[in-house]
Image (cartoon, rainbow over all chains, first blue to last red; front, top):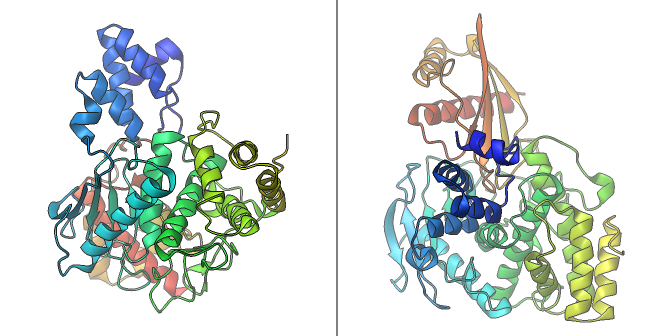
Amino acid sequence: MAASTLEAMHGPVRCPHGCSILPPDLLRRIARNGNRRQREAALDTLGLDHTLRASRATLELLGGPARRGLFGLAGAIKQRTVYDADHTETLPGRVVRSEGAAAGGDVEVNEAYDGLGATFDFFAQAYDRNSIDDAGLHLDATVHYGQRYDNAFWNGRQMVFGDGDDDLFNRFTISLDVIGHELTHGVTGDEAQLVYLGQAGALNESLSDVFGSLVKQYVRRQTAEQADWLIGEGLFTAKVHGVALRSMKAPGSAFDDPVLGRDPQPANMSGYVRTSADNGGVHTNSGIPNHAFYLVAVALGGYAWEKAGRIWYDTLRDRRLKPTATFRQFARLCVQNAEHAFGAHERDAVTAAWSEVGVAADA
Amino acid sequence: MRIQFRVDGGFAALPGFNAPVSIECDTLPPAREAQLRDLVQRADFFTRPEAQAGAPMPDARSFTITVDDGPRCRTMTVHEPIGDPALRDLVAEVRGEARKARERR
């Protein structure tokens, strides 16, 4: 009913993958100015959108000071809560560690708590960002999710970690960059809302790898040259022939295993994988922008979060970045933001890096 | 009964590991085949309405299951997190069989 009402007003409102085509701003206007039926339809559609921005919009329209009420006004103070699902798939589970509580004996709980803190500190100190939504969002994570659960994901409001399968995958809290990766999905959802499909989806994935890796580098105080540029190191058990899930330095080289197969990531547009699987290969083609970032970071040297990371962060927040952005559109904004923030040397380094991965970033 | 199974996405998103697998249930031990049949039935697989997919959640997986049982055949895609316990049990057990089938290849 919600969809049909809005379709009558604005044509089709949902893409084949279920994501809302109408932007939240338009839905907000409909909900604010439409009749009762239109208002309900808009609120229903906003409610199906799992982004923080849509959540805030919905709650604001329901009449409350949503940002304050749901997310809290914590200033730049961390507010972490780790939950235990006790091997069920019910979220969020029971609270097992709140902000300021001492570490206990549960490794996953402690890793999640520390990883949330490291990611919060990284964004706050490197980019003056107050949590995922830049408004002090409380950081929630659930561990021990499901039975032999070999995945981690961001559900639009919190992080979810499985313990691995006791066979090929270790616990998903083991790798700090995995935690940074998942939380960055929250940042991307709040800023650019890149659709999780095709090149925009691969950019969404790549941004999570970029900032996930930078969180790790920031904690270790590693320069671009010193960093391993691996994503998910330690996630594989000893049975697997591989060092990590992905390599930003050398996409396609992270693993080669009889059971898991070979790392499929390309480092260049010549290897771009056209597929309907995985929302258009978002975890595969992310190797291309991942490698572009690595090339920029190494070319500029020093701590990667200071220049390369700043350029990518400015681009993520750039209002010209469309939710359906292509690699080329993203790359062009990177070039412009590099020049704006730093100058010609950095602009040329960014242009060269994107060119090396087969993306023409010049105008 | 034949079950075809495919995994899509996930943080790891391993195309080789996620490739489609076909499980010939008639070749399984009778007790295991009966268990899978029971799970298909309890999940109301052939008649349940397919849940509406929301916006894709980053790194969440989807599982596509086809059950071909003589005159009845249906393909359904299930997205994480799976709310229905019966459907969750079916996906978990089919995943286990798929992994064994993959390792036998």
